[in-house]
Length: 114
Length: 111
Image (cartoon, rainbow over all chains, first blue to last red; front, top):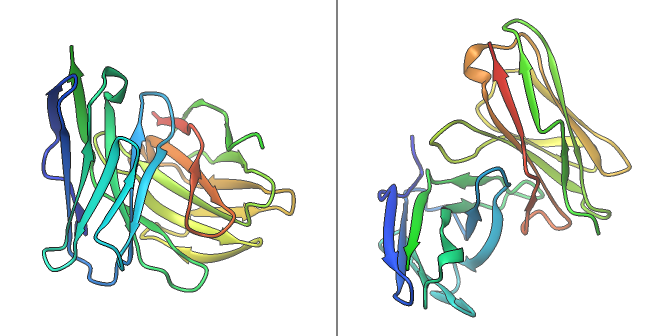
């Protein structure tokens, strides 16, 4: 039962172009969404998040869009840089008191080429 | 702040053995969660501790257990290791229960 899905295992983008990473979810109780970046031999690093009361959040080169009716979110990276090459995980949580477990997708490997 | 530190970084155990993985969180991070990441998969939630009590658990059997200590450190214990337990184990902590900081993980190999 994969509640958070990242259907593209990999993506290759040229340096300077836009990278768009997609994520779909099935659980309508999710109210907070996050993107993490992971390099080999390191833990996931938080990138950007969005609450379900918003449809867009921006932080520098990174923008996350949320479409609640479609249960879809996307991460836009503009412009893409070689250092952005990593595995990107979409995660979602549904707050229940003090427990807010993250449900992760399977990740998308982004390769930014020169 | 020193981030989230996990030890050891790598570990090899034999099937049937027991293992303890350790995590040291940042001061003030009352919430700690443990995740299992199998090869090619996203991290899977094991359980969460808040102020030294378990307050959330994923779909993992009771042989996965944990402890959280007052000094913001925590442990993940796995008994009767199985080959499928081979994975990267990640500890994540948060002061609020939302913005989690992850450690670099412990790579466990069960042979």
